[in-house]
Image 1 (tube, rainbow, N blue to C red):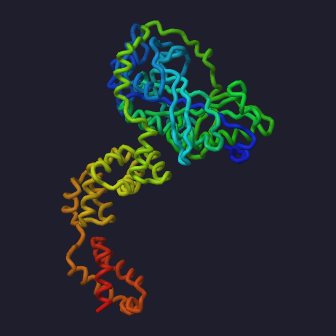
Image 2: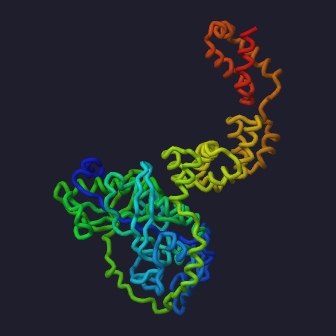
Length: 504
């Protein structure tokens, strides 16, 4: 496939104003599905978490999951939305292989939450208020598993299998209004907004928020309009594309930037933008055409005849409002100040989804920079190798036990990495692993002096160099001693002993 022609990002911004709209889908972590008693669990054998309702079989009737409604109201309140006194469900009609009944139960003209705003803060310190149009409840579709090809996507696949386990999973879709004024920050605004939503639902406890599992999915709408129309508002907007189901913060930023450059190149050369869905390709960093994008009328929405309207009481709404946690943006500011992280350091933590893990580790007494080092370093490396989440491998309490051994002088960083590996592999507690593997630092000067003497015998000129003021020459001896002691020596103590020998 030929490489897509792109205009430079800087030139694209000179010629056009980017406008984006974001649709974020949140899978709720209720025990059962949205309209049936089928289990809402991840990773089950294909097509086992099913009831007749999930497949729309004749005679089956949906029943609303009240816990999902409560979750949706809490999310709407956290988004700064008004909660509708009356809201209802509608049938969204379309044919797609992963929707067995050929319609999706959703909300159309009466969503449960509407007219909100979310404050986000960019790495530059710029504050942006993202306008929320609505947050509505619906059921998720099933999942197509594409077999063959190199990417696991439909392009190049030999055939596709349908897994209906996800069909009917409770979902809230959050739809923004068009976001103007982003300019060069537009891609970062998109990723920062999704990051805030992710932190929000984790704090609310309503979603597992695992982007790699599809618990959070973002559809990014991008359009451009020529310079000079900035004051026209929504009356003059370009044709938009919708890049579907982007499932990482980095990819959201890259996809929005790519679409700005791609559309700018087409428009500048006299072409037109097709209103369509597009697929994001992580491997190439490009989008490709999906299907022509339907408007609302094409889905033939009509009220769901099997479900009564929802009428949450004002007392319930206020009761749920009282349970809201600290807003993610305020929490970010507080933690960034408390931890004294740079903007880049904190953004790395956010992108990795490790804010809560580091917060728990710090709360247990570990310095913030130490907690960040271990979580974003060795643990993230192991998680990446295993295609896992860091927090699935090890707990904050287990990290604390390793750090305590380092602080006590029992371990150095190199040995601590081995202990962390052992903890992750299930070999026992940190102390048990140190004992079983014999990893403790050698604290007796006797073995250290023997190793130093052996190293000096191999490098007899080192002492003379040190006595001549070339103290850095001690590094060669220290390295030899650490190797001989299999890393189980305190490098600072070895250096002291070498300098003592030189002073004799």
